[in-house]
Image 1 (cartoon, rainbow, N blue to C red):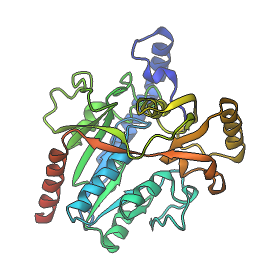
Image 2: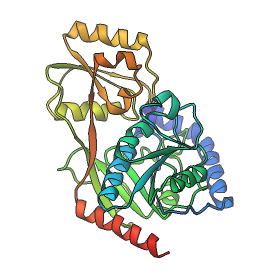
Image 3: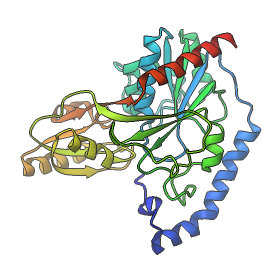
Length: 335
């Protein structure tokens, strides 16, 4: 889905405020149902420690790049990490180990294919079953991409990722806003927060994010290119949670963007979509470029027409996040 404008209407314009007010009772019911599910569910503790990388909002905050970076760090530490994902958008329910040579995004979803580049990845709609498969396959620790609101699997440590620019939106719960649950409830179950900034220079407004008095670690990170920007004029397109963030980052890295086309998150690109984009690119004398997440969803026979622009999550204080991971693994090893 494409986030409605009133989700980010922090100025309180009358139209957005009225819409949010009308939808707020549904948001309260949504939050109550989620809280009741968490309260009545006894989470299963896996045979290996589980780190959850979740968020409190719908839409893109950068969870998957953060998960990939944490997996790489854990590999450097010799922890033998596995990724665990629901496999949203894929037809397979799992549990199954992702094989990039065998599976497509239609099978397992786009995010697991990206995570499988960083470490072995399991997809499973049933998170405990997925964790058990990971343990059986030799995982020493699991990084679960998303699942902060899923109570079925015990988390040894939970990171909440928040976009430093959009924050919690207007502070209302779905469908009145982007929140999956009240901020206070979600932060209470978190062990640390990762604020995703637009660049290395920007500092987060912790008071606006309600993190200035939080007695838990707060880390700052951003998405940085992991490959050169494609040369020449570019026709950029993206179907992720926040396409504009991709466009802004591409431009900031020196990309010459002739036009930028947005699609809904997890959009399944068709041959007609690519034909329309290719015709538009020709009109601009530009080449097509998209995110890695979108690239893996493209029909395989059409990928040659498109360049992928990869990014990675970079932490402002890498030593501090590595120390946090070391403490998690050490604590889990003695429990």
